[in-house]
Amino acid sequence: MNGIRASLETVEDGVARMILYKDDDRVRSFLWDPDDLPESGRSGDQFEVKFEDGGDIESEVVAVSYSEEMTEQRNDELRIPTVETLVRFGASESKIREFLENSGTSDEEIEEIIDEYVHGDGGTDE
Image 1: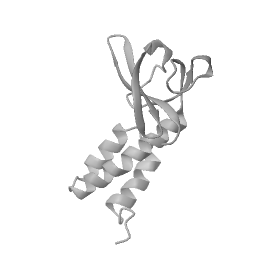
Image 2: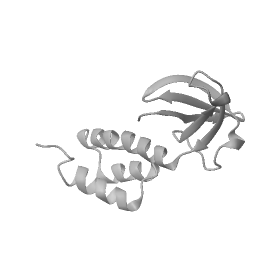
Image 3: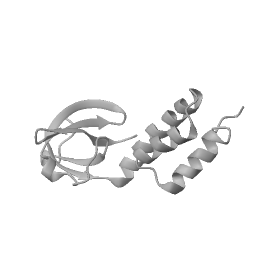
Image 4: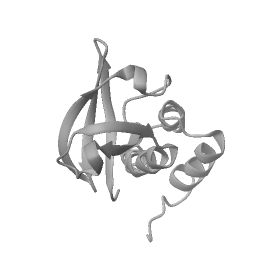
């Protein structure tokens, strides 16, 4: 992913640990109040960030806002390589379906992925 973003890593003991990224490079971690995150927040959710006094990535983070678009893009970037690995190692269709359901994939997307990677050629040119 390109740009500056924060990713929710964990919420423990009333503190959210966020990771600040520039493009795909991890810059640093920072702590955030989980009450300022969506109630349904999950590890891996992506957030737009604002810095103190309009500063740059080295400045203090003063606001984060959940980005459904960035979260979906990041999930897609992680999901397909995982499905490819599951197929390569002979996972059953039901196990792949379970992984996709647990990763928040819609029913329609699950069927498309199952058709392509389990019943099809997995997007390869072979």
